[in-house]
Length: 171
Image (cartoon, rainbow, N blue to C red):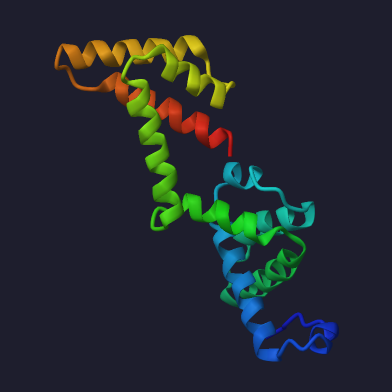
């Protein structure tokens, strides 16, 4: 197996085992990046070389080739803001606490907007100015009407979808 070691790392007092652990972490993070959709990858700030390597990864079908390619991706990850990438992936991973907090934030926005208060709508608009004001008001009005008539919450679902798209576009 090909490893990418730098001799200066050993001079700094980092052991070979520690270097291997860090490389494995970068490979694992690279594997998670490979599994993302292209639209999700576009939201990440990364070098063009890494972006191209991630686009090429699905072409490697042989197990050994994919393993070598992931090692290459891991090497390229050294030049990236790994903490920002890791935080973004955790927000997308439904099994993490970060994703749960992100989801709860969207639910709180929906609940606040469903109160029908103009102040809440203005607060959402100031937090996310790219939102279409008219669409937001229409959905809030429809959801309030559905709730008053005990109808299924179709507009509330559409409102949540609008909130999710708006908040995720802002990431």
